[in-house]
Image (cartoon, rainbow, N blue to C red; front, side, top):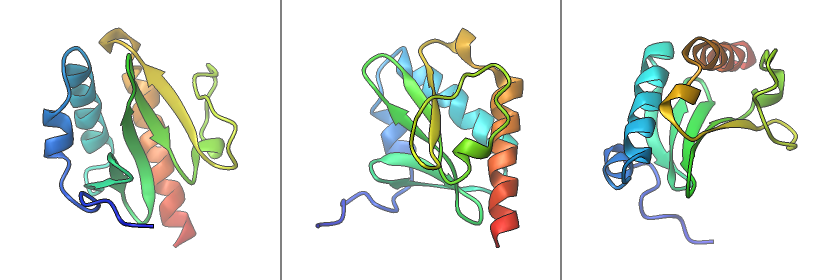
Length: 123
């Protein structure tokens, strides 16, 4: 299988290619991730921005009407009292965000920090 040409690139181009209203929503989530995991790196993998800190913490994926905040290796371990996370994979979970008012800053920040901490414990 051929590697994607953008694999490992910075994510600025991905964000710049988005149209409103998803562009603003993705930018808001990007800022939230960067604040919650300030030492995480950001690059394109699998065509989406992936945030890594001792392994993948989370990523953002664009769909037609929403941005998905995805959690990789620790998705099933995250504390989700409101049942917001979706998915049935072995580890990965995601939440779909259609508009800014659906951004649960406190909950999403908690998940990002939990995922980063889980990676550090795997080291």
